[in-house]
Length: 111
Image (cartoon, rainbow, N blue to C red):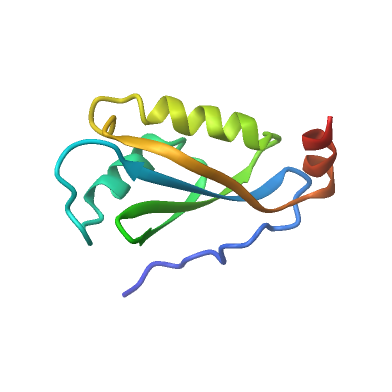
């Protein structure tokens, strides 16, 4: 039986932000099609962030819903710090893109 999965969209909370990060391997032997490193990275990111893993041409793409008042710069810093972990330090963050966020978060980004 498949566990209940919440829809992967912002819930309308004032703090909700949907963000997509893309990571590229900078060294080591790539294992195309293997989700192992993506799963490791997701496990190292904050557990309360809702995460969805995809891969695109050897890159790791993680879509996250962050239900707390953070800016995209703060999310980028958290992901960069996570990628400093020796288990996944062969990956670098190449993109951090906000897909949608509340009006409150948008105002914070503009400041």
